Length: 240
Picture 1 (tube, rainbow, N blue to C red):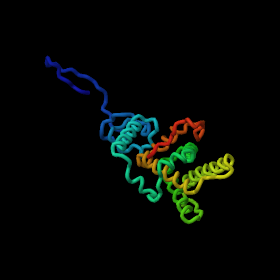
Picture 2: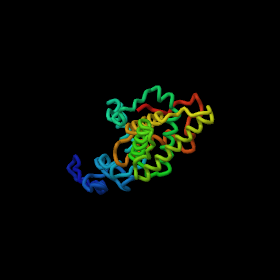
Picture 3: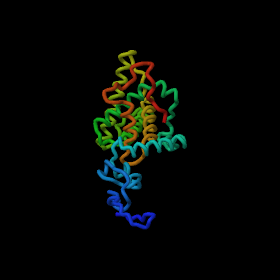
Picture 4: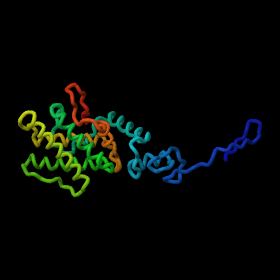
């Protein structure tokens, strides 16, 4: 209850309702409803706990606003320099991206398919799966030794299986259309590293971030084909 004094000296009592505290910190005043916390929280807790302790739904307006801010900030700063620190010896040219667009789209679709099959997957799971696969292909390219992805994580293994299935299907499609496969292991390595760097550019880096997952879902809506069906179809690949 708040008391305000009018100009004529009379006291006017105006009831403004209870001052509710944040459902998380219980200290600051609540400002917004949080679907992840199932209550109203303050702006500071929203910013600090978003995608850290809060498993934010993808359509949360505050999450979307934060992602847009991060993307705009990244554009102002240019490409994040640490992305190229992942497999720095693997050079990816614009010509490669152009020539192997369908491969990259196919592998992207495999990642989206994995994430749809297991809704608990986060960006960090896809990044870990891509890193593990890329390391295996790097060993294969350099030494011709076939190495299983070095991970005991069942989710990461599932991601790797989905990607490997797509690679086999891609080679089989080439065999049917041209009588042989032109896809080299080095091409797969470059495509994996390309997607790895893209994922690092898309994710917020927070433990529960799904920014890259949501990006893949937007590129490949449910019941849509994995690859472009027309030569005139615009490219959905965004250079990281």
